[in-house]
Amino acid sequence: MAIVFVVTLFSCEGNYKNIQKMNLKDEAPVAVGKKINLKYTDSGKVTVNLLAPLLLDYSNYEFPYQEFPEGIVLYFWEEDKKSVITADYAIKYELTNMVDLRDNVKIITKDSIVLNAKQLYWDQKNEWLFTDQDYTIKFADGSYNDGAQFDSSQDFTIFLSRKNEGVQFIDKKETTNGN
Image (cartoon, rainbow, N blue to C red; front, top):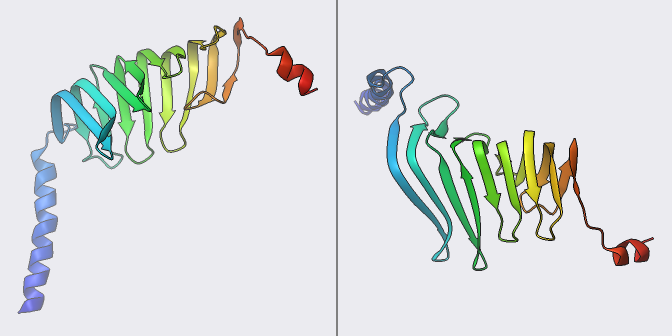
């Protein structure tokens, strides 16, 4: 009797999931959020604040993702300094932890670096940013790059640029002492 009950229980659960999927319209999100104001905390302090007018959650797909079709604003706090990321469109892929930011992407870091790009990919797992689109970046020391294609660490301590023009400032003390 117990075996029949267990088999019935698991078969009902499988059917319930299939019924849930059938109730969703083709290509419809599993959830829709409006006026999103999501706060992440660490030890009682807000570390990240995500704001978005609209969130479409497609976690019911085989390759789950969350879409922000009306844009996104992210605030990051670290040691009482704030960084901001904005974009007119964003999509976050759950399985890869990749975020695709598009249209009027702007990053202002806590160290006063300002990046503007048409599109930017953010690999959250490896803390890496990259694009193959046009961009401009202005560093805190006044140096800047205008170009297409770059790879960078999330904190911009490593910045590899291709096809660019700009002005870079070099510390003569470091170049003469370092040979």
